[in-house]
Image 1 (cartoon, helix red, strand yellow):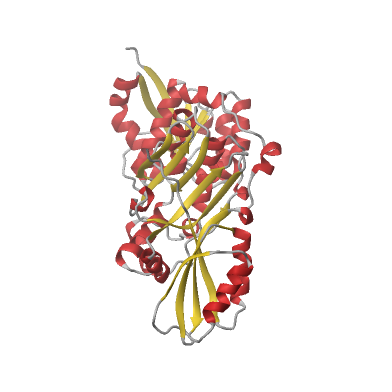
Image 2 (cartoon, rainbow, N blue to C red):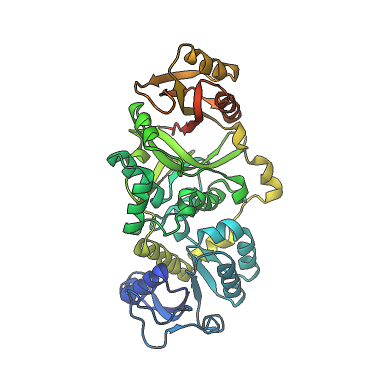
Length: 440
């Protein structure tokens, strides 16, 4: 079979960019044998041209001049691994306008400016491929865009941030507190020096915005997504939830009802211990997708890291070179904002079950008081546990699980509970998520 040479330029030579260069240089022969495409690394651009990297480039490839990438008409594909949004957006726009297809793993940029970038790509007859943007080496985007096209996707439940999953997994299995495990995650390289984007739920929201736009066919913005992080999670709540048969995960959730209304949210979630996602440990990712024809399919693997992410990027490079990505991108269809804005469900209207922990003063009549607050807001109790032992101001922990109720009812009830003289401090509330079961 005749081989066709495709020249690649990389903008950004950090961890991921190094991995991409490494795969292209080391696996080019094998890739050519399997695809007929000979990948040639023509240019790598980075402001830092002296720091050591885990790959050695041929002489003359590394430069700090972006013009060498943008102005070289023989380079077919530009790979953006710079990260961030503003400068990376400018680079992607210039790559598209110079006639190059773009491959990227930049979920923040796509979540915030994807619709604009897609429009510019279409105007210039180019495509953007971004498999690595959502779950590292897991091929979830191609699965949703092509493998599940025949399905009406009604739900997605994903563990899409390895930092948070590592923290919660270790808090659960080792009984360590949040700050201890976060420090360990940073030492192991699972968490950034500034972990705010991860633990706040922001990173998961970026990924959910991208995935849900293709799963549901709507133009989605970050403003459509309710976000709550794991910063306030305590060891006590993980333990008490475990006693009730639950495991705590940070989930990215997208659901579509029979009327086409979509709810999008990222938050800590108690799920049953026998659920597939409860078994996802450490820095791994997993996403369960529910389709009308296929039922439940679950994707699992490493969601970050140099080589898993590089693997997905090089897969996209090959797909672009073969013409598959361009064809898929040209036929991309999403309902525009003027038609979808009213189809995004407000968090206040979401119905779920809830875990509540309150610190009650140890005196007669307390149960009647908090029970009355819940009843006044039409919230039904499915179970409650009261532990012996003294907490702050002679209080005892009471853990309550509710039947399904509307978020607005729960929010109002929590405000009223906090006003009770017999309850110390702010009640803790965590959603209990009942992931559907696909069984014969």
